[in-house]
Structure formats: C-alpha cells, structure tokens
Image (cartoon, rainbow, N blue to C red; front, side):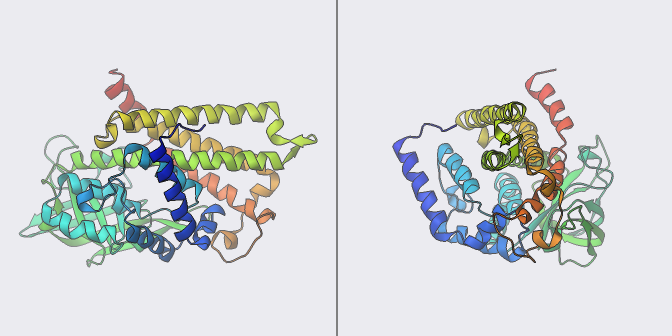
Length: 397
C-alpha cells in the first residue's frame, strides 16, 4: 500500500533516498540484508554518520539536536530506513533514555548526557528486568541505599541487551519498601566502570552473545545521577516503556520483510507452480498484509492526533499487533525456505564465511531469525500484560 504524499513529502523522500545511496556503507547494509550480526564498531560507525548529518535523533527537540521533521517526514524516514537495510542505531540511549532525560532530568544532566548520546560517546544499556521481576517489573528487588552523597546499589539485572558493550546503564532500583510495590522505585544512571559491577554473558540459541546478567555488589553511585525525584521512578519507567513499545511495532521492517517473503515464495515451487500461487499460502500472506496496513494506518492516526508527543496506552496496541505481525512473517519466511531454512551455520551469522546471494547459505539465517523474534512478544512488557493495559486504560473494563 502506498500513501498519498504532498509534493514536499516526495521531495523529502528523494533527499532521504539519496542520503542512503551516498552515505550508507554497502558492507553494513549487506550485513543487515543477510541477517548477519553487527559488531560494536559497525553500530558506532553508522551512528556517527547520522550524527554528522544531523539526522540521528529525529524525535528530539531541535534545541538538543532534533531534526524538526513533521510527523509524515518521520514516517517516511522510518520507512526508507528499513528499505535501505540501514543498521540499527544505539536505541537505548537515543530512543529510550533520552526521552526520560528530556522529560524529567535536571538541565545539568541534559547538558552532560544528551550530547554524549548524540555523538555515540556513551553506549547505554537498560537495567530493568530481574530474575524475579520481568513482566511484573514492579516486583524488582535491586536496592539502592543512600549514604551521604552516594547510593549503595546491590542486586541483579538480567536480559541486559548488549550490556557487554555498554559504558553506562540506566537502572530501576528500590529506594523504599513503604507503600505499594510501584512506589519506592527510583531511576539511576550508573557508570559500568564502577567497581562492584559484573557482566556475565547469556548465550542464546544462535550462539550469540546478545544478552547478559549484570550484578551489583556494593556499587557506589553519586546521588547526582538520580533522575527526577527519589521514589518516583515508576512514573519515568512507564514513560520509557511507552517509547519502547512504539518502537517494537517495527512497521517499516515488517513492510520490508513482507516483500522479502513474497520474493522468496515466488522463487519456491509447490506442485510445479510458485509457492505464492498456492491458495492457502497466498491467503495467509494476504491476511498479514491487511493487518500490517491496518497497523500502519493506526500508527499514522495516532501521530496525526498528537499521541506521539504523549505516549499512553495506545503504545500497547502498536506493540501487540506489531510483534504478532513480525513473528508471523518470520514464521512464513522459514516455512517458504523449505529444508534449507532449517540449517544453522554460526560461521555465516558471525561473518566468518562468505556466501552468494543465490546460495542456500543465505537461508541459514532464517531459523535463528525466527527463534530470536520469539522474544519480542515478551520484552517491553509481555503482550498478555499489554492486553490488560488496553482493556483497562482504553476499553475501561
């Protein structure tokens, strides 16, 4: 489905496409297209290219380096970004922490941390989930006890994505046990080089070191690193999760992947005809495409209504449907690939082996991709929890 663009939107789209053509390193886009793993230096390299252009933080206020783009321009940017197979940016700092800093941090904190995020001087990770506090995040037990000008932090975080690369971690910690479990939570910024922090890898099914456990043993954190008010962290956490859930919807990526699915299904034969012509398979593809169109229209309507500036329970709708669509496409990609898609070659994924675009090696990334996407209906607040949010906050049930 193509939207109707105004002349100025078409001009902007052409500018974006030309930028990707001129400045996106081909070796990085190839890694994304072939579903190969990105290295830290890859992510930082691309981040700095965008920062130099002034396009790294479209959602930020212009005062702090934002682009000032309209809602439609940001939609075009996201769509063209996916089409170009551009690498992910350092989203934990840019898209999750930065909105919290902009909304709740002191001016001194903004002036210090935002430029460093913008220019990739700091790599951030997220310290939310714990072994006993995942979807029920408010049950977290990592403690921060104030002693003079410092908090002494003890506890454990888990599923810390790319924590092995991080310079800093933004953490939810318990600073009080009085009242409900949502009260008494604070939002701390912690330097990962502080003594007492241990990062332990969790190796996933595709033999990738993507997530970690992080342990805090009497870690001293300056009180100056507290964002907002003590014991008000749950408010900031919910604000951050709204931004995360909106991003997880990944509409641009799903539109790109749907085209990949159609091309693959046209190249595969079933009973002497392209798989995409099989009535049952074609009907399933059509169902996904219709749902994706509806999701995109919903997202655009929310943007037009100004919901993007005050993200609320609507983000839960985008998260639920967006993740379900992403998973459905990945499942059909794996199905369409046939037996070749069941192969698993870590050397290919980790960039230790060359392959041609037409070879079966290119299909070896589909099974790890499928399994990796099982997590997206869980992190950022499980979809079961999101349905509760929708029923209470939107439907009033």
